Image (cartoon, rainbow, N blue to C red):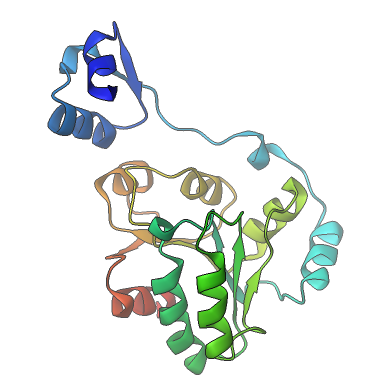
Amino acid sequence: MRSIAYSLALSIFCESEAGKKELINYLNVNPNRISIVPLFSGDLTKLTISEVIQKEILIKYSLEKEKYIFYPAQFWAHKNHYNLIISFIEFVKIHPNYKLVFTGSDKGNLNYLKNIINENDMENKILILGFVEKDTLYSLYKNASALIMPTFLGPTNMPLIEALELECPVLCSDFEGHREILGNCALYFNPANTDEIYERMID
């Protein structure tokens, strides 16, 4: 049904050249019907949160500025929290003062991840904050040592753009779409390779 809808559409909008290529390759869409409307951040990056408030938010969650890695994503399996956790377990052996912070809602994978965290005694190192308000999300971006996004799906993802605008270093899956929007402003890795994820965190 979806392919029929695409074939009947007068015009189709997608957010990147990489997305356009996928439409053409997988759904045989006429490229003349596709227009690119670049992805842009929402109002989160336009907030003004004082450093005092940011510090209070960090204290609330027992976090230190630039001593945690941040991953804002819903808990779907394709978001690949698992490989990140496995990589972070190794990373924290070298950098014991760091934490890993997750935000987002459960989409069926959270209990599985919590079990892995508990089995490895990482409850105090890997924080699951759930849904957070915008002032907290802003503060987490602004004070993280890096945003990390090991997702298996693209071709683009909003948090990468938010991080870039908020001057938060980015580590992410090596997708054509990610390189299109970030260029040299990120470190890339194969999301299926825990060694590569670990190495990028060390970098």
